[in-house]
Length: 129
Image (tube, rainbow, N blue to C red; front, top):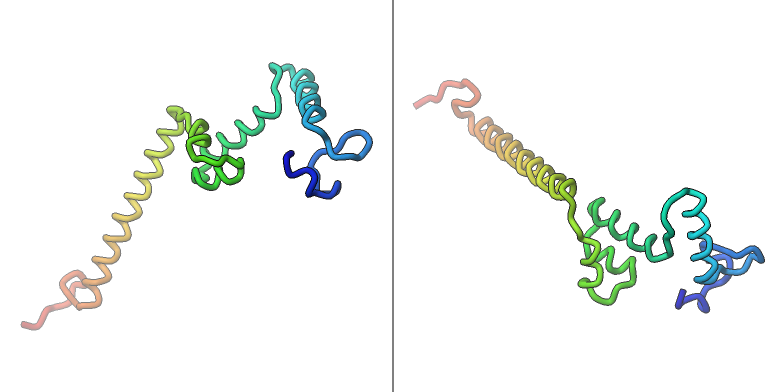
């Protein structure tokens, strides 16, 4: 909201009932009302920021990108959202295992292809000696 003075009203995401850019207080009231209607505990604007950063990191966005999108001056501020869960760790291990398997498969293909281009025993051809 600090950059508000530099934006025209059509560039704003949320507007008040008069068509003007929503203030922090208006956004907070929107969120409190929506939370109440949804039957969940009271949440403010920071919870959206926290949710965005957490989900972006879990979806694979790198720390530097999330830092820039959140407007954090320091990566240490963004690291708060790196609270890992068992699922996050399990997913990371699965990705590493899949990557290792694909590398091994590619290496195997490359070795087989190299043998085929040399006309070696891999192809079942007789090697004239």
